[in-house]
Length: 142
Image (cartoon, rainbow, N blue to C red; front, side):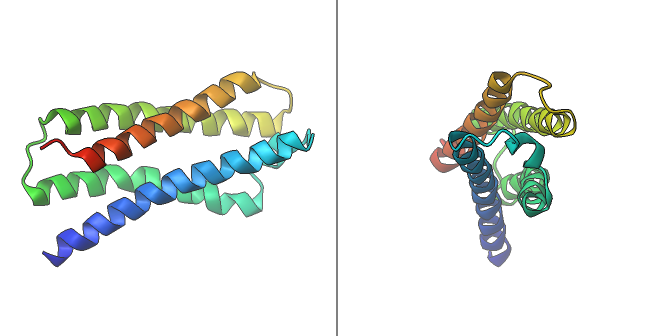
């Protein structure tokens, strides 16, 4: 039973770190943009934020494995609607998050490339996806 408790804690912490680091990045960009900082995109992936980006990627990579392990330990069938919905939403959210990372890196390298509105839309979509998954995990209609 201790393994289950530790795994639940790790899974919840990974979810909170993922949402927290994404929210932290969003607040940082919003504050810099409101001050009129035009070089925000070129500084977005610099060293102080590498930790945040690394944390984001580690959380994205660990969540499917810890989630599957939790489902396996609890004995729930993988065909439940909320588990399948979470998997589909996770796939869409992770792909949009990686697309967002690629867009931000391209903007950092060559400033002025791409639409900031589309980049914002990708970020909001990713956040909504992961927030919806957290809601499904909390509700767990078993």
